[in-house]
Amino acid sequence: MPKITYDMTKLCYESAKAIYPDNCKITFMAKSVHESTGMAEGSAKDYIRDFFLMRDGKKLGRCMKESDAKFYFESIYADFGTDALSKALDSFDAYLESDGRNHQVLKNLIQDFKEKI
Image (cartoon, rainbow, N blue to C red):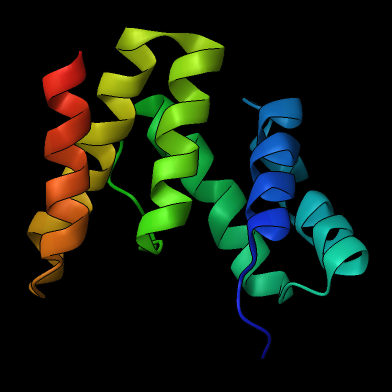
């Protein structure tokens, strides 16, 4: 399985943004991302779904690596503002609290963004 690249992450974000809030189109968009980039279809679906969860302030379904989370946070802030970023950070926080593993780098990233808003 190929590693998730910046281009894959960016396309997932842009695809999710284009269809939000219509979650019926997530599977179709994930297939499109897979065909365009080679990203595993399941991973693309998770990343697109995570955008929806972040926008809604609900617990994330899957963790992202730090650089991908940072891209999502920066993009959500640029596209939707402070309130949307706050929801995205809460969504990620809820996932990390329930995960039980130590994601200190991600926790630090979230804290850095919280301090900016």
